[in-house]
Amino acid sequence: MIPPTNAPVADPLLAAVRCGVSVYDLGRPLSVGMPQSPNHPAYWHSLPRRHGDMVRSDGGSAANDMITMGTHVGTHIDALAHVSHHGRLYGGADAVEAGRGGRYVELGAHTIAPMVRRGVLLDVPRALSAGEGCPAGYEITPDDLAATEAAQDTPIGAGDIVLVRSGWGRFFDHADRTVYVGLTSGVPGVGEAGAVWLADHGVHAVGADTIAFECLRPGAGHSVLPAHRVLLVERGVYIIEAMALEELAAAGVHEFTLVLAPLPLFGATGSPVRPLAVVGNG
Image (cartoon, rainbow, N blue to C red; front, side, top):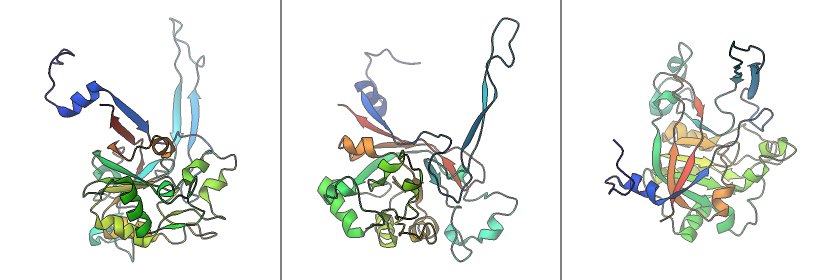
């Protein structure tokens, strides 16, 4: 039973919603030809049935769709099964044995619980006076992260989800789709030391506005991914990539409630997501 709108509300979350909230969509639209890592199958959308292909006796008609895509295309979350190191997954599981049968039963995307947690945006270029964004191939260091945390007065706590804005996300819709991927130029991002710094704060998940949660050196592409090793394999921290953070940053919002629910893809190494940053207006 839903109480009348003028009735007192015991649930503080519902009370906040009734007082009004602003919601920032941190997910990228999925579209054919969007920039993506070359390591994953591209997104494709088709209409196998269009209006008029079949018309019912009463004049009604329906269209339907089919999509194909890798689970690490567009805004997505990495399951702990996504990366191994020296043949081992998080917790020491044998990576080959864990994938027997074509799915990861223990560490797949279906094991990622829906998230409603405190989110913190670390707007690194703004804190460092780096203009629109960090330079191509720039490594975001622990000192950069700590300076941003202090400048914003948003201390990171255990269980938080920390989103790191490099400013590179502004290239996602660039006419040349290769710019965002940054194979030639490199891409700014958190390096190994920064990943350790974040994990040491006890974060539940991290995210970024780049194709990978990494500092990608010019010409190196995805040849080495030390931040992934630290976060997924060694520390059990989920990674969210290709996030849309520009609107949130432009509004000066650095602290919010992050709502994220992966698709329960049984045994998958990742899942598309549409994260939402929710901010009370009261």
